[in-house]
Amino acid sequence: MLEVIQDNWDLLRHGFVGTLKLTVVCGIASLLLGTLIAACRVSPVPPLRWFGAAYVNLFRNTPLTLIFFAVALGFPKLRFNFSFFQFAVIALSTYTAAFICEAIRSGINTVPIGQAEAARSLGMSFTQTLSQIVLPQAGRAAVPPIGSLLIAMVRNSAIASAFNTTELMGTSSTMIENGYKSLWVLVWIAIGYLIITLTMSALLAALEKKLAVVR
Amino acid sequence: MSREASVLFDVPGPKARRRNLIIGVVGTLALAGFLVFVIMRFEDTGQFESAKWDPFQYTGVQQFIFDGLKATLKAFALAAVFSIVLGAFLAAGRLSDHKIVRWAATTFVTFFRAMPLLVLIFMLYLVPASQGWWKWEPMWPLVVGLTIYNGTVQAENIRAGILAVPKGQSEAAYALGMRKTQVMTMILVPQGIRTMLPTIISQIVVTLKDTSLGFLITYPELLAAAKLIGGYQDYHMPFIPVTIIVGAIYVAMCMILSAFATWLERRLRTSRKGKPIAVEPRAVAPALDGAGV
Image (cartoon, rainbow over all chains, first blue to last red):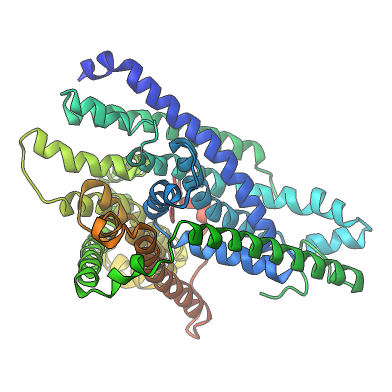
């Protein structure tokens, strides 16, 4: 049991760092893309709204494995050449962005319209209303679901192992080929993921506590 | 959705309307330009050649895709049913009056929700064979893995639905002399089911999407069929066409189910027999949620 981690420390650490890297890069990319699409979805311009709705409906109803499949195996055939890591980032963040968009949008929907009306009747400008009244409240409502989505993204990132990306789950095949018991290999990998996800949920809980306001 | 009044912006005046029109036209052009670029690339790499699309007229190829679809739906049906059954048991465990049962159910739910589903499926796929415990076809690790993971999520959905029933309901039932089981089956579940049904169906969509993980453990489902057809030399390797076809099948299936969930939610909300109770999402779901992903 312990020899798995003793003998393969470097390999496991390498995979663990790979998963962390994937988490950070995809997290940032999907937050940016999700915000952009959410902005489209709630904008006053109909074509952008349609685009946002179409994107969300399409990607929420597509299996992530299929997206990985299409990106990692299909893109080279269309002469879009990137590294495997970049493929994984593209697949994972386009998928997660659709969910982040919905979390942001429902966060905005939780702000009562009276808030904006009150701000406007106080003479606040559009920018002031948005930055001081609406978005702070919407952001507070959107943080918990976005946090859960990012944790789900870490778990989903294991799929990248099947498409040649260096990450935690991918190290299992090397170790099993080298004759280690698959049971213990996978137990250690599961522990690796649990370390990341449980840390993230602890951070999220702390953040929520900090943001909580008594109403 | 009415856009007349929004928290984000005022009703647009003549100037803003003109600006919105310009943004709309520019945005549409940019998207159209991107689309044209992608289509050109498809054309350049010969994805529209008839040789690549002809194979899909062969009954053999159609049958092959259909077999993949059947395998996907089989795993999906089994996993969906089992996960709801497991979810009901786990929810009952989490709502139990006995501390040990509650604790055991909570540990089970927390653990399996935090673990990547893929790791779980690989454990079920590799470990029994390598330890010499038992042998099973790749469908069963997939079904069992999906059942365990989605069961824990369904348990939370069911529990949330039951907890959303006002306390007065169960108090009144106890006051009438009903037993615990009677309160649950005759009062709480029938009322809670209206709140939980839409979320349960949304999670079933996730179950359907996750059956594609079977591809990674060599279960011959839709995606595996796509890969095999896409690599066929005799058919000029129609990888992109087959991905488009299989992707359309997946998206269509999931969209139908999602639309059903939305329709059901709206119907239950506007039903004449009173409204289901709104669930407080954060009240029950721990931070490891991410349901629907």
